[in-house]
Image (cartoon, rainbow, N blue to C red; front, side, top):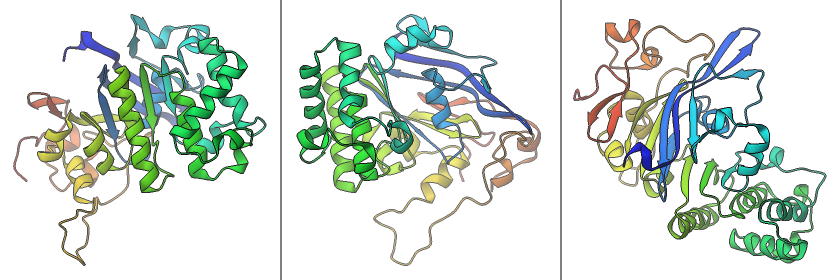
Length: 328
């Protein structure tokens, strides 16, 4: 699919933070796009820049301390990074929605769940209070909240962590968004509710053509729920392509390490999982060359001095590694 068909297109996005120890390069030259009815998965270790990239795309990173040395985020013919706050407020929660990672800090502890949900429909859809309440109760039921007509009038602290997460998901889906950014949407949920939520997001994608950007650590969710995947490390995308191609023929050593460290149903009992040695780098003091080279088992001298670009290794599959295409 061409870039012109993309609902959201992120180009050369950089999000840096000023800190006492220098500049932290949280997102450093990221490019991705998502098309109508498509799900893009973004994976990587904690601190790789996944969440910051999505928050930046929606203008939700406070500036300062953050700033964007470069980047464009195109949606509906507008660059979101250059839109006014009023323009963004009209889009966020309506055409562009986000399921946040931590519902405990995202929900207002002073307001009942009813007000936090109905406000979305009243502001963006012009619904009456009664219509908004009916819509909110219906969505709570769809995301698996028991007795939603009663529980809608409770406060966030009266819900468990998993149920707060379901409230956040209901809030994001109320206006049937055109683009949904889902940041670890199923982390706090048991497997039954997890499957239910993923089915609900898939239904939204099928029925409305919603484009989904799914941030997750769960490679099983990525394998079963996404069309394309982008693997992030140290604020950059190091491998991207069709999910099936990346999982079947991973090219970057980091992607191979993530897949090798994931339990498989055919792994013999008692087998030890592979691990990726070391820790992610300090984003304020990145090593020279490829940022993954201190942890890489396939490092060569070139890796220590020259940062590899993201290059095509096959149609619709790219990797940022000097050894891409070399058999392990």
